[in-house]
Amino acid sequence: MLLLTVVPAAAQGMPYDAQIASAWLDGFAQALAAFTPVNEPEQTADPARAGQYLIEYEFGTVLAARTDAVSAQEILEIDVRSPQVTDCRGVRVGMEAEQALGSALGLAEAATGSGRRLVVLDTQEAGYGWSWAYMDGAELYGAEYITYGQDAHGSMKEYTLTYVIEEGRISALRIRTAAATMAQAEEGLRTAEEIASRQIQAGRVLVSANERAAFDGNDLQVMGGSVLGHPVDVLIARMGEPQEIQSLPGAQGRILVYSGAAVRLELDEYTGVEIVRGVSVSDRTVSGPRGLMVGFEMPDAAALFRCDADLYDSGMLYEMSEAVRGELNIYDDETAVLRYSCAAAGVETAELEIGVGGGRVTYWHLYYASDLGNE
Picture (cartoon, rainbow, N blue to C red):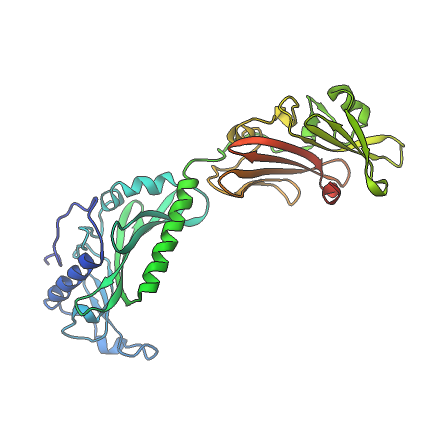
């Protein structure tokens, strides 16, 4: 059986817009007249959707508004499951995804991440249209081309071309048409452009996967030694005498003030000794957990602690329990926060907050989580 609507076989870089989609649909409808359905279309009418019939052919199915002499205007959806039909981009079932998508495949594969998501491949230079890939982690399982424009009768329509991809090959083609409005076209393109802009911002790995140990109780250190939860004398021996000592209201402890650092103290009621509850540092000469220092580039700071997978945007670095976890929060182009927590002595939870501005660490804050409201 001859291919329906034969076009050049090389799909790479072939355009897709409303005019091309509409012309292809006209050709498909004309070629369809030579094919005989393998079912009784009248028996497939859906009572809930009057005037829609599912017509089965050897190559797949056609959902149309009538059962015979179907015109392009009456075709609602085409589902192709064999190589007998070539679409308007020169793609057919069985073709390798690399040939069908061309250079766009590289963009999809480069945008690796976790979970199911959309990756915008391109937007039309003129008119309203875009393409995107469906990803599950690093696996590509589909691609879609969407465009808006007027048909031969001047009606606004949405034309959607979908590729189902399995094991690197096209396993099905789906062509759909639907009535549309200019507002829908504008909103759809705006959404695609927003997703694409986020991809550009997140196009590089912000935090790389590694097998380092998670932040834990042994990391509650300043200047190479443990200080959190220890007597203040231990910290002063490492940082020197403070420039100033401030008392907190309500007998909530004291603050040691250094140049570019502050230390919160609390009186241990059982021993009568002041212990360190938190350390905040913006000075480049004071080292923290695992040698962390202000001025580190974010990837270097994040590489000090565990990360389960490459992270391109805000998300979890790891999560071992409710109290033992790491996460990255991106607030805008300039600011971000890395936050780690771990179980500490007794029922305490310790946290390390690393502030990032302009790609570099601007401060770090080591403290007991129960003191957050008192900081």
